[in-house]
Amino acid sequence: MFSAHAPALVDYIYLIDKYPLRGGHSIVHATEKSPGGAGANVAHNLALLGVESKLFTTLGRDEDAEYFVRNTLAKVEAEITDEKTGKVHVFVDKEGERTFFVEPNAAGKPFVKVRGGKYLYLDPFPSKHSFEVQVEEAERFEGFVILNPGFPYSNMGFEKLKEILRHVDMLIMSAEEFSVLGVETADVLKYVDYLIVTQGKMGSACHTKNGGFQSPAFPAKVVDTTGAGDAFAAGFIFGFINNYPIEVCLRLGNFCGAYNVERVGARNFPSKDTIDEFLARVLR
Image (tube, rainbow, N blue to C red; front, side):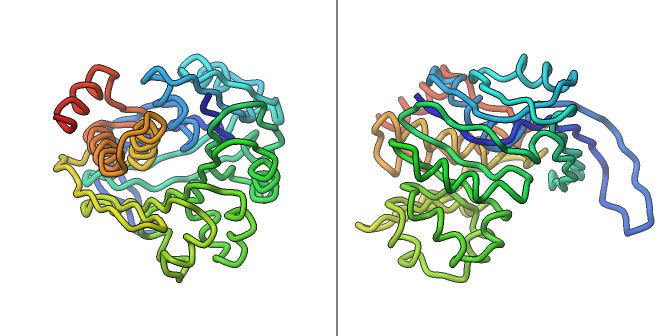
């Protein structure tokens, strides 16, 4: 079973032409609503592919909580820690670049424990308590631990991040997040077995103690980059837990990321049939 310890968020997405200068204004051409949260997206995407997935999270007592659970395929195991569920206001310009404004609400109180699973995926909650809570979860988990630190943990610096890396097997992060750490891949590999770095239009890479792998990106017409990293992570992890070679895992992750950015919203993910067809071509 795949378990995720991650925030449940509801995305309110606003499509605009461009970001205004401070004090200016911009026209909203369309508004959409979508369940979100990086780790929640990964758990949902894997459930779509038939992987038994659970999300351990926090919710409010509002309509957004019902909406989130109703539209998440992973089984949601939640503690109610606020009246309101976490929200993210996402502004997306015509080039597909997005900017987030987060209302933490229940996600700001990440006091939920993971129960069971073979794989654990950790994604930061928008909370000052998140890091300490997830260090504890990683330490007591008996299976394979995957961390996506994002900027919240990367910005803490490598010395602080090492506190959780001691209990992590796989680290997935963007090239920008990795650069913030100011270290070499060898420094990270003293703690984890796999370092996966997404590189946008350059594709992705996986570094291990026995060598590295690089995979080019797939061409895509970018509409919205929200959730692209989560789609990549789900694709890569699906390949990994099914024992595909690392090169195939990277290609599958890149394929899922490209599929996602051509559509609006964080949970645009290829169907099981589409994934199977893609793997059949790659493995031919």
